[in-house]
Length: 141
Image (cartoon, rainbow, N blue to C red; front, side, top):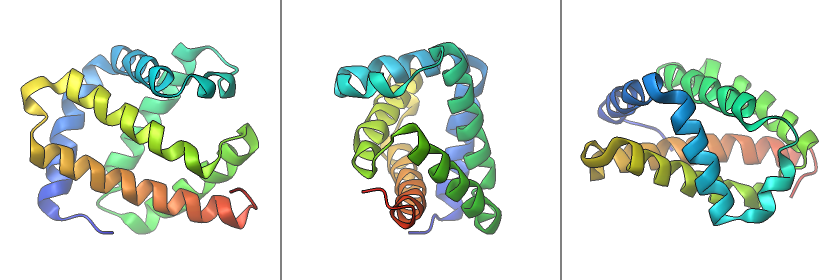
């Protein structure tokens, strides 16, 4: 799945609104994630504030990498290998994606238009497809 230039622009604009409130957005994300699937809480051993900063840094890198997928793909593959070590399974991508979409909808309010949502869904599919393929190479289901 590839993204259009318009979608990349929408992602950059919308994430630009998230960056200044990154800590709050991360906390909201984890609240949403654990409401969707409470069993995922056990995967997070470290302080959620620290984990939230890592999440936001990775999202920032992914957003910035959308213009250069050849450089983004190896980063996502490395991320997938690390997540296998943490116990992440490929079926965890759906609740994570949904939690991110809920977080963006809450955080962006009326700026979370259908076009912005569709662009984020495209990004989530891109990230998930690359990471799941790498996780399967690692023997993770």
